[in-house]
Length: 114
Image 1 (cartoon, rainbow, N blue to C red):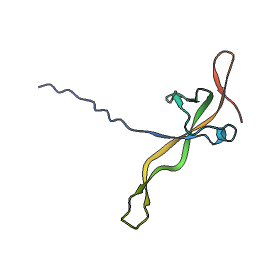
Image 2 (cartoon, one colour):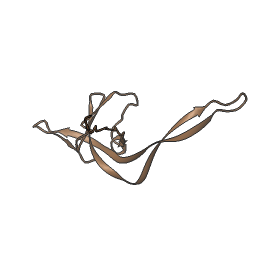
Image 3 (cartoon, rainbow, N blue to C red):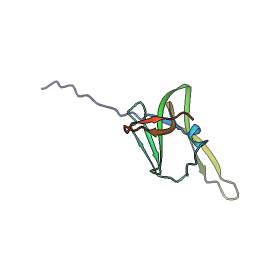
Image 4 (cartoon, rainbow, N blue to C red):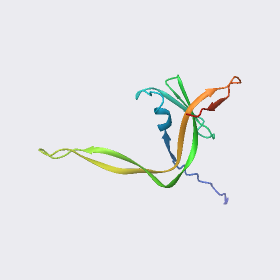
């Protein structure tokens, strides 16, 4: 009989809040615009919106506990108005704050100061 240790890996989900407040004050982001988010495992992820707008992110740690919630409408009985329920979805430990990016002549992307 072999005594082999089997390492069981449990994948954990990590939620990140994407903060676009500084950017949305200066540019209009259409609500249905396609986007690409790359480099989540780097210090400065890149968010490209509609193939035109390029944003550079920076991770910030949350202060205290930050929670994300979902709300859904619950059907009601006849002659009653539907009601909404709110349920916690996740704890958020990081905020990904974005700024407009500029490309240098050498092709490197850097954040701008708004």
